[in-house]
Length: 209
Image (cartoon, rainbow, N blue to C red; front, side, top):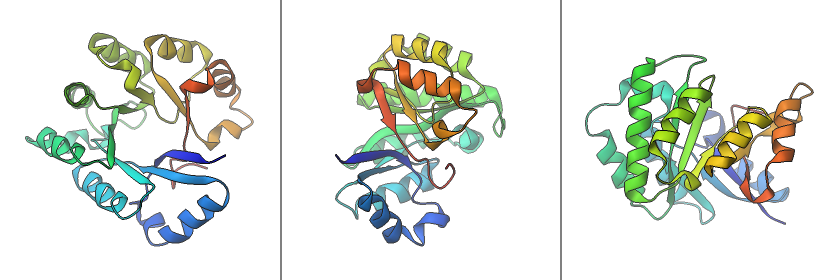
């Protein structure tokens, strides 16, 4: 059985310098397809160009909530142009992060909603980053509710009740290696509850275990 790492950051300098070794090690343990994720316009462009070099690598194009404050006029057009590439498979990662609050929350919300509308226009899946902002993320998605069956909550870290809310909306849940932690019981229960056809796996490398 072969697996897909649905969320990696191969453009990060920690991985880029040793990328071929990383991909070889992954392939040796059964991971043979990859999605490298964009976090701002330059990173999304780099991810798209990197994916074009490998048959079994794809990319996304998006503005991470940390970078929302730097999103300038015209960024949606740039994302749309990148999304036209056959190797770009989703908009994101986008969403809300109230843990670090590196961008003002009102700007995070606006940029998140803008990207949801773009994804709807393009009929493209969305990769959602949600940290300490579950209620607002769900509220925005509930108002949008256009293609929620194409929404994946990456690095899912909530409990079973939160998982039920998202699954009832039609979303997918993506789990990382942190599910193996001893204190990860709520996430483990969420994974056990979710149907197998609604689960993704990811590394979020190089940022998580």
